[in-house]
Length: 450
Image: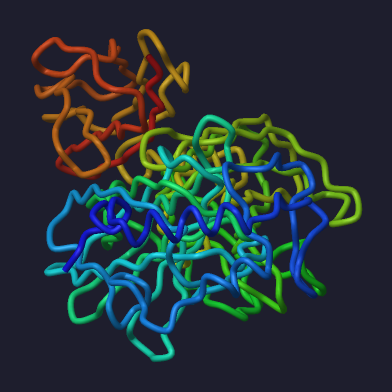
C-alpha cells in the first residue's frame, strides 16, 4: 500500500496536480454551494479548486486512502505522516462550521486500550479541516471535527481531545476549507487522561453526555427557557464536582454544552472556584440576584486544556449566584471531562466555626489563595492529639508533609512555601491541603502559581 508521501511523489499524482492547478479557479470568499457557510475574513489559501475542477478530478478508481474502505492504517501512536490531498476525491463533507467540497484523505485507527488521542494538522501548508468518525453505527458517527484552530494564521486544524475505546475503528479525515487542498502533516498522539478520575470523593454533575441533536434540559441555565440550573448545597468543607462538557451539532449549528451551577449564599463570605478540564475552558462567577435578564459577571478566567487552571473569586453577599463552565474552543466532541472545586460556600448562620468544631476540627482556606509565595494554613482542634497536615496533588499523591505530630487543642497554623518534600518548587495547579486527626478530617484546595 502506498503512503500519502509516495502517492504525492508518483508521476500520476504529479500529472493530476498539474491538471488541477491549470483548471483551478482562485475561490472568492463569496463562492459557495447552496446552504454552505464561508468565512469572509479568510485569505485565499495555497490552492482552491472550483466546483468544476473538483468534479473534473473525481476518480472512478479511488487512490489508497480515498475512503474509509481503503483508509491508510495507523498502526502505532504517536503517528506522524505527510502527503498531498489534491489528487483525491471529495468523499466527506461536514459543516464544521464552514462548508467544504475539498479533496480528502482517510486514515484508520483501531485502539488496543481505552485512551484519549489528539489529532493535529497544525504544520500543514493549506487551510485544513479535520473530521473524526467512529465505526460504531454505519454510515458512521461523526464524533469530532475542527476548522481553524492553529498554525501561523490560525487556519490549520486540530482535534485536541477524542476519547477512543477498543473494539471500534476510528477514521481520521484530512480535509480542507471549502475546496482547499495541498500538502499536509498529520500527527496523532495518545495524550491519556489529564485530570483525575471521578471517585467517591467527587460529586457527579448528573447530566448525561451531550451528543448530536442534544437538548440540555438539565443545567443549561439562562441559555434556555425556562432557565434550569444544577443546584449545589453549601458545605463546611470544599465541594468537588466531576462533570462533562463538549461541542455538538444541533439543527445545523455547532452548540456548546455549557453547565450552569446555582449557589444560594446564606453566609456572606469569599467564594473561590477552580476548574481543570480536558478542553480549553472559560469559568465564570455570575451575580444572579436580578435574574437572567440582568446577569452581572463578577469574575471570569480561562484555562488551557490539561495544562492550565481557571480560577475565579469574589466576596458574595446573601442571594443567588451562578458558576458557569463553558468550552472556550475545541472540536465537536462530547464527554470531555472537567473537575470543579468550590471553597468558601458555607452554611448559615454565623456559627459555622462552632458547627465545624462540633465535629472536632476546623480547617480554613489557605491565605492567600491563589498563591505564588507562602500560603498560611489555619486550623482549630477541639481536642489535643496527633494531627497530620499535608499537601497532595489531584491524583492523591503526597507532595509535602507539613505537620505529623502531637498538637494541642485550640487554634494553630502552618505555612506552605510551595515546595515538595525534596525541596523542589511544585508546578502550577490546584493542590489539596488535608488535615487528619483521630476524630475527624478536612480538606481545602489551594491554587499554586509560579
